[in-house]
Image (cartoon, rainbow, N blue to C red):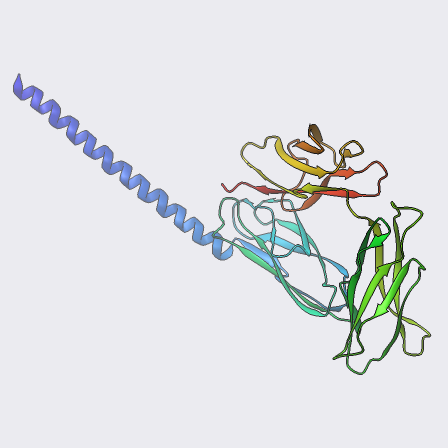
Length: 342
């Protein structure tokens, strides 16, 4: 009886040992297959055509649009994540993201050149879904250039109780160029030159006249830099003015993370600091956006809910507009949705 019992225990131990060995072999073969598959994808699965775009020399602030083809040259379908850009000046879209064997997707993108002379060296990165260690990169190169430019490229003036905030602007020009006067096309704006030409730079102070009749006045104009002879305009600088804000929104950019496996509604909270909340209005500017307001003294707490699929990932979208009763002050709340890593 004892011998039979001992034999049964021995058989169980042998079976358990064999099972462990088989499991280890299976695990090894799976990892080996997975690693070989990983190597094949990283080396040859995707081909970009072209893999580098050079748009040459363009003007300041120009938007240039291009597209590239993303070819799947492997023998299996590949799912790609949303494209990743290294600068907010580049916007991209990949259609479709599920690429069948011997097929191609189209990568559309647009890049805005800087508002000052500079070389451009940006990129767009593609990853397989769940594989951040494997990437394909499209390079974007070029240069923005101009003989004369300003820093900043535009001005916003604020006023309150008849007093406005003055702003400085620097006008840059290339060696050998001699600009003329900088003038405003509106009598409401005063331009004062602060410095003479120093290494191709002039400094100006821009201000508003006092607003006695309308403390909520909004307006805009342009500063025109003329040639030395005064017969043509060499540069235009947009100027706008508005009342000093009566409220402040925190944050103005809402960052949301969405799970790809189970996309659900996204919720965020925004606090509006105000001297008086009675005249404030909150209005959604995108479909699928709902708001709930709660008042805490003069401030407003906004709870924002976004339905699944309302916003694409990786792109900043406007979702809310907050204004006062006279629409003199306005703040646009944006949202940026990112995908949760697998």
